[in-house]
Amino acid sequence: DELVASATGALVQMQSGQSGAVTRIQNDALLSASLWVNVALAGLSVLLFVYMSRNVRAHRARLIFAATVLIPLVSIASYLGMLSGLTAGLVEMPAGHALAGEEVLSQWGRYLTWTLSTPLILLALGLLAGVDTADLFVVIAADVGMCVTGLAAALITSSYAFRWVFYAVSCAFFLVVLYALLVEWPVDAEASGSGEIFATLRALTVVLWLGYPIVWALGVEGIALVESTALTSWGYSLLDIGAKYVFAYLLLRWVASNERVIAGVTHATAVDTGTS
Ligand code: RET
Image 1 (cartoon, helix red, strand yellow):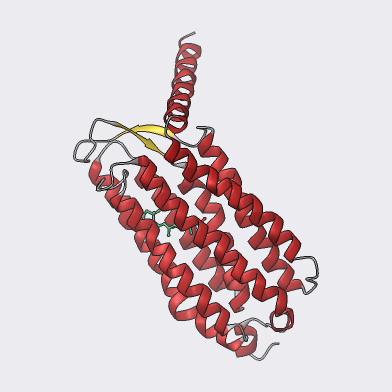
Image 2 (cartoon, protein in one colour):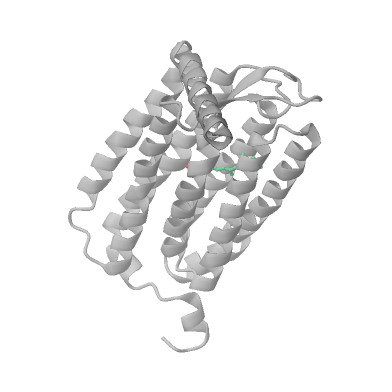
């Protein structure tokens, strides 16, 4: 009986957490707008990308298209999760935080779904550059590590210091990703004939991705220099528009008209060892 009572209690708490979050989101037009804009743009992107894929035949080009179309699809699920309150909740900030003791609305679904969307972005970039599987695996693993520890940093309520410890761990993982994008992958891209488009997408990606930890640090989850959840949310939403839909459009437009370059790409290691 006690078990049933405590389980029911936990469920009721979860339910009220969700409805508390939904009420806050629905009563804040600026906040809701930051989420709905992305649902709309992601939906249009899916339709556009599927249309752009109509004549693509080469295996690797189709792989890039598949990975890239999944990016806005994940985005739709992510934003609907937050809008419905399923992946948003009220988090009571620990002592030391600028909003200590207050219930802050956390859109923790963002960090959760980045574990799916950012590997797809890196997969598409890696396939474009023709990097080898081991390289791709390490970078994607570090990227997932970055997202999961970012989720931890956002959700920890036991101590303010621990939030920043996890933030620092997440940044360490991020450095691995940045190193690959800036130092290693450009060499592979050059060798496979996609150097120019890779350079464009790399610049876009590095600049926009650096924006996320900055928004985290300045927004409601970090030092709360920006105390508004709506403005923090707009920060992420605008970054998402560039890092996902604009990024994916530029990539797919190039792939669709340079299928031959993509089809001719062999793994850098295969070339190195003469096995191709
Ligand atoms: C966090 C906080 C902890 C430190 C770091 C972060 C980096 C996040 C990044 C997110 C990129 C997201 C994208 C999503 C597209 O769907 C987790 C904010 C380093 C780089 C591109």
